[in-house]
Image (cartoon, rainbow, N blue to C red; front, side, top):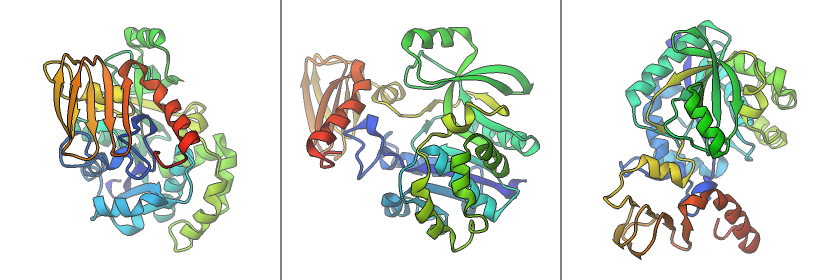
Length: 360
């Protein structure tokens, strides 16, 4: 079955919660967040190559980012870049990828992973995914990776585990989206809940069947293209029909409804890098608890801060700041309390309403 395995990297997001460091013209997946010389997308691609051949790596993105992907992943086959004509969340993204792969290889199994996650224990990731492939290739299962929680994080979804069906593979009991801190603490203390990584493994045929059962409106739109996937007519069909797809996540449309959902509980040194707080937790901090990204900092009586500059060469001088985000992206400087980072998404909405797309 190894020759029937594919890796799908989802690379269409904007990263609003990392504004202004992440902007529409350069979202976070294209940025070298960790100072390794590789962007988050490139690190995701490197991990994919430990699982499948280069010819079976597929990247689904927004049409606006195709050139950036070609620049950052020059070895990726051009025909393996699926350019969405509109943003429609993860369910349509995954539906297209599954139809595309199934059209090429009806026996295919696939891992679907976001392009902007951080995984520190890469060998553990590879071994976990290979075990996951073996499970879904023998079972009609929708498998997700559940991450051992290290804190009562309110920015992640949680998976409650049920009985173990195979070593390391458990039935999913419930999904809970982004609980408040009190409930998150209960989840962590119980030992029954794991973070929802948003990384999925399944056979292409199984996820397509699940979409038809639980997201029929979406499935019908794609089923109009029966026979076009994997052919030269595919892109024209997508350009016409994809914008009509409902904008919905795979979690809401399928995973929270399906009966054949399982979780592989893993410890990967994982973060979705979805928030400034997750970057802070994943980063080296100086003796004052400050994190620096792409800048020099001279700080006085300042602690617990994140200093991030998109264009290198800038010196930041800070005095008397406690637990702040200081993010500079050239034409935007944001100074915002770390404890209130959940407000950033609303701030971005307010900025867009006032100034249009100029600063987004």
